[in-house]
Image 1 (cartoon, rainbow, N blue to C red):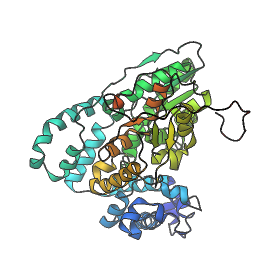
Image 2: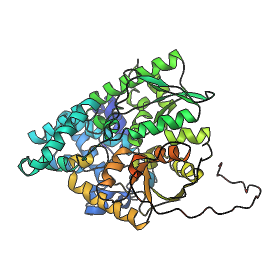
Image 3: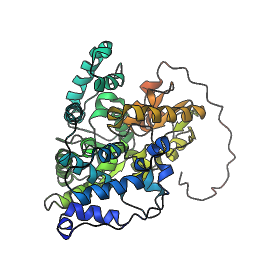
Image 4: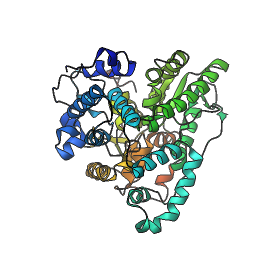
Length: 451
């Protein structure tokens, strides 16, 4: 793509970065039919190719963005399916983030939208505040019809109950001989919505010989505010994490920074880019990013213990967008679930976003509902016993439209290797798994499956 930035504009590092990305786009258009908003609307401005043109025009012209430009860019899920299909490998993730930061700095939204976005940025990344907001939301649900229109979809998404477990800084010691010392990102919203995920992660890692550190002053990864264009808020959260984990690295060392929410993992792995132009933070941010990995990536390296009991339930696995399109962590969760004795089933349109996308389902509830119902229908079509995934946002979003138990991958792995039954399965009647099939003792056939 040809751009027309002035020499003065290109002296700005943010514009220079955007220009370099824009110039890589050759408008092949492979991205369009992979884009959920384009598939639903058939509007070129709702496709990556169209949005890239809008970003170029907005940045070249400078000043206040056009309202229609803001609307089309806001509608982007940041699912990044376009990056998987792009033949030119356009770095769309950093381009759309740069565009959102520009909009946040130069565009004045309607007062109601400003208030909603500010509230989300000031509540969701802080577990205690979020827990209080959910309590108020439950009280307000009976009064939904009296609430302002922008708040009504938010009340619809307030769960009737949550399994809150906010973890204080501490160290969970390995069982048996220690094999690794890892930090766990406890997260923000996930701790309030479903503390069982962290509990299962910790048990699983302990059982596999890991000391698990919940570091002092580590908190939200920064992704929620970054994708809303609030760069300074995101950097403040990220800086706190980098410094917290750097202290642990210096004190006793870390073999990994474990993340069990895929959206958070994508951001932590990108800390090096976020602080690339910060002389003091660049090196420690790169060091932390190099240690970051999804919990299934790390367990695949360690090797999963043999299951204590075979539970051959049929598991539909949902790939979170951030996991498959950015981190490219596709095989580890499937391989681990199979090693644990489950029967893993892919679902149709597995590349397609469920509509959660961070705060997207709160800010764009109509589009999110269409995507959520579409995803739920495909999952139901696979006729599984259980849905597994690696992101709390996907679990909450899909759970609104799917009458099926939904669990995090680590909960199933923990259960298979000696942990308790996941809370979402308790009290439910699951179909009896098929009897085990006797396997002849044959030499391994080789190949890529290291299990």
